[in-house]
Length: 304
Image (cartoon, rainbow, N blue to C red; front, side, top):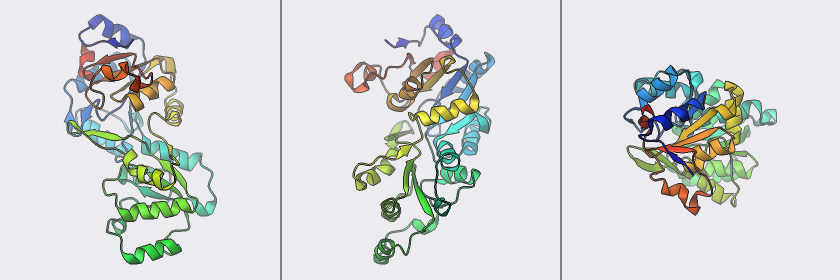
């Protein structure tokens, strides 16, 4: 049974007292696109005043940690780069420090935006594709021949990394598919099906890798965003906290809340300002047992 906390001052105080660390999803929790939810800044200030550690954990790979710091500060939320942990950064750490690749296959073909490229650069990982204007065009007859023969392919590519790409096209998918057919590792920043923005939902990063999954006969990429526990392990390793004294705050059952539950955190808190719109969503069979510890209508309700 998930506890409803909105308007329950005693319940809110008791809930907050259980935790030393609060992990926050951003889109759909703090804001929707460029719309900051009322009470967000005050809630974060309240938690910090009580000595709580705040970490911003986002699956949105379009922005780097530095970009997210700028966005947070532009909305009146003080933050440091070290307080931000994104799926693009998690993927870059995995590629540079964990993934074993031959020296001749260290280049990454990117389906995604500059946030991924910035985090790959921070780990000195060579990459192609991404925001390169050369790939932002219609495919031409000569491209089919050049890709099929391998003439247009970079032999150093050993990884295809898919994230949210606002300029996805057939040419990019053709290159990515060709590299995967030739044995490149298939990775994804995250598999979110939708992205909350402007008070509505739009295609998420999962929609970018979905065509490749179909082309590869259902083979799924290794994903690094929530609910992947590879991301939880990386966060714990960086911030060194007791999981039982940490709470995940999010708007999605299948990513945020599942992430906290599978990660063994002490609690999870669901807000209804993003993807999840009603408590009935975790009361039905569709939730597959993913039930938050507590819930509020919006983050600002934590102020009591």
